[in-house]
Image 1 (spheres, helix red, strand yellow):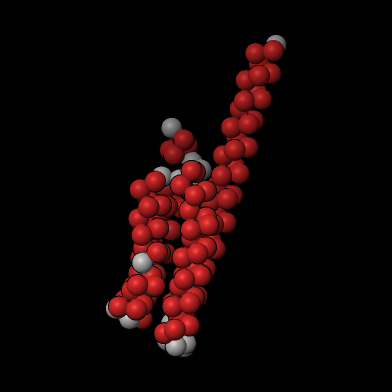
Image 2: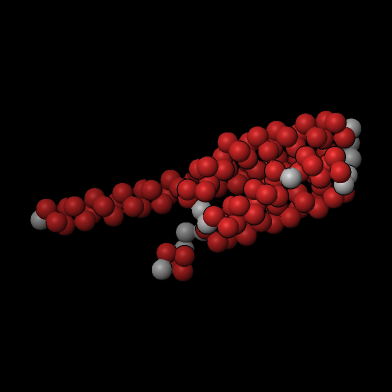
Amino acid sequence: MKRVAAACFLLLGAVAITIWTDYMFANEMNMLEKELDTLITVADKIPEKQLLEKAEVIVSQWEKSSGLLRSIVLHDGIDELGRNITSLPQIIECSGKEEMKKMCIDAINMIKNLRECEMIRIENIL
Protein backbone atom coordinates (compact mmCIF):
# COMPACT_ATOMS: atom_id res chain seq x y z
CA MET A 1 0.00 0.00 0.00
CA LYS A 2 2.87 2.37 0.79
CA ARG A 3 4.31 1.81 -2.68
CA VAL A 4 1.04 2.72 -4.36
CA ALA A 5 0.71 5.84 -2.23
CA ALA A 6 4.31 6.83 -3.00
CA ALA A 7 3.77 6.26 -6.72
CA CYS A 8 0.58 8.35 -6.65
CA PHE A 9 2.38 11.10 -4.76
CA LEU A 10 5.22 11.13 -7.31
CA LEU A 11 2.75 11.16 -10.20
CA LEU A 12 0.82 14.07 -8.71
CA GLY A 13 4.10 15.91 -8.12
CA ALA A 14 5.17 15.39 -11.73
CA VAL A 15 1.80 16.59 -13.03
CA ALA A 16 1.91 19.65 -10.76
CA ILE A 17 5.41 20.56 -11.93
CA THR A 18 4.39 20.12 -15.57
CA ILE A 19 1.37 22.38 -15.16
CA TRP A 20 3.41 25.00 -13.28
CA THR A 21 6.17 25.08 -15.90
CA ASP A 22 3.59 25.34 -18.68
CA TYR A 23 1.92 28.24 -16.87
CA MET A 24 5.23 30.06 -16.32
CA PHE A 25 6.31 29.47 -19.92
CA ALA A 26 2.99 30.76 -21.26
CA ASN A 27 3.15 33.89 -19.07
CA GLU A 28 6.68 34.78 -20.15
CA MET A 29 6.01 34.12 -23.83
CA ASN A 30 2.76 36.14 -23.76
CA MET A 31 4.54 39.06 -22.14
CA LEU A 32 7.40 38.97 -24.67
CA GLU A 33 5.08 38.63 -27.63
CA LYS A 34 2.96 41.55 -26.40
CA GLU A 35 6.03 43.75 -25.91
CA LEU A 36 7.45 42.89 -29.33
CA ASP A 37 4.10 43.55 -30.98
CA THR A 38 3.90 46.91 -29.20
CA LEU A 39 7.41 47.74 -30.41
CA ILE A 40 6.36 47.06 -34.00
CA THR A 41 3.18 49.13 -33.59
CA VAL A 42 4.89 52.21 -32.16
CA ALA A 43 8.01 52.05 -34.35
CA ASP A 44 6.79 54.61 -36.87
CA LYS A 45 5.09 56.83 -34.28
CA ILE A 46 7.96 57.61 -31.91
CA PRO A 47 11.50 58.91 -32.33
CA GLU A 48 14.36 56.46 -32.66
CA LYS A 49 15.69 57.33 -29.19
CA GLN A 50 12.40 56.33 -27.51
CA LEU A 51 12.25 53.21 -29.65
CA LEU A 52 15.74 52.31 -28.49
CA GLU A 53 14.67 52.78 -24.86
CA LYS A 54 11.66 50.51 -25.38
CA ALA A 55 13.89 47.87 -26.98
CA GLU A 56 16.28 48.04 -24.03
CA VAL A 57 13.35 47.49 -21.66
CA ILE A 58 12.43 44.36 -23.64
CA VAL A 59 16.03 43.15 -23.46
CA SER A 60 16.00 43.75 -19.70
CA GLN A 61 12.77 41.78 -19.32
CA TRP A 62 14.26 39.00 -21.43
CA GLU A 63 17.35 38.82 -19.23
CA LYS A 64 15.16 38.51 -16.12
CA SER A 65 13.09 35.66 -17.56
CA SER A 66 15.68 33.82 -19.64
CA GLY A 67 17.12 31.86 -16.71
CA LEU A 68 13.75 30.37 -15.86
CA LEU A 69 12.94 29.70 -19.50
CA ARG A 70 16.24 27.93 -20.09
CA SER A 71 15.49 25.60 -17.20
CA ILE A 72 12.09 24.54 -18.54
CA VAL A 73 12.39 24.77 -22.36
CA LEU A 74 14.65 23.48 -25.12
CA HIS A 75 17.90 25.44 -24.97
CA ASP A 76 18.40 25.86 -28.72
CA GLY A 77 15.09 27.61 -29.28
CA ILE A 78 15.49 29.84 -26.24
CA ASP A 79 19.08 30.72 -27.17
CA GLU A 80 18.06 31.67 -30.70
CA LEU A 81 15.19 33.78 -29.39
CA GLY A 82 17.54 35.40 -26.90
CA ARG A 83 20.04 36.35 -29.60
CA ASN A 84 17.22 37.86 -31.60
CA ILE A 85 15.82 39.89 -28.71
CA THR A 86 19.16 41.09 -27.34
CA SER A 87 20.22 42.35 -30.77
CA LEU A 88 17.22 44.70 -31.11
CA PRO A 89 18.95 47.85 -29.74
CA GLN A 90 21.94 47.37 -32.06
CA ILE A 91 19.67 46.80 -35.04
CA ILE A 92 17.77 50.00 -34.29
CA GLU A 93 21.01 51.96 -34.10
CA CYS A 94 22.69 50.43 -37.14
CA SER A 95 19.99 49.25 -39.53
CA GLY A 96 16.91 51.27 -38.68
CA LYS A 97 13.29 50.71 -37.87
CA GLU A 98 12.36 48.47 -40.80
CA GLU A 99 15.05 45.92 -39.98
CA MET A 100 14.00 46.06 -36.33
CA LYS A 101 10.40 45.30 -37.33
CA LYS A 102 11.61 42.25 -39.29
CA MET A 103 13.57 41.05 -36.24
CA CYS A 104 10.53 41.50 -34.01
CA ILE A 105 8.38 39.52 -36.43
CA ASP A 106 11.02 36.78 -36.50
CA ALA A 107 11.06 36.74 -32.69
CA ILE A 108 7.25 36.51 -32.55
CA ASN A 109 7.37 33.59 -34.97
CA MET A 110 10.02 31.90 -32.81
CA ILE A 111 7.77 32.34 -29.78
CA LYS A 112 4.87 30.74 -31.65
CA ASN A 113 7.09 27.83 -32.69
CA LEU A 114 8.33 27.36 -29.13
CA ARG A 115 4.75 27.36 -27.87
CA GLU A 116 3.87 24.66 -30.38
CA CYS A 117 6.87 22.55 -29.43
CA GLU A 118 6.30 22.90 -25.69
CA MET A 119 2.54 22.35 -25.70
CA ILE A 120 1.47 19.60 -23.30
CA ARG A 121 0.45 16.78 -25.60
CA ILE A 122 0.94 13.04 -25.64
CA GLU A 123 3.39 13.34 -28.57
CA ASN A 124 5.58 15.70 -26.56
CA ILE A 125 5.50 13.51 -23.48
CA LEU A 126 6.40 10.28 -25.24
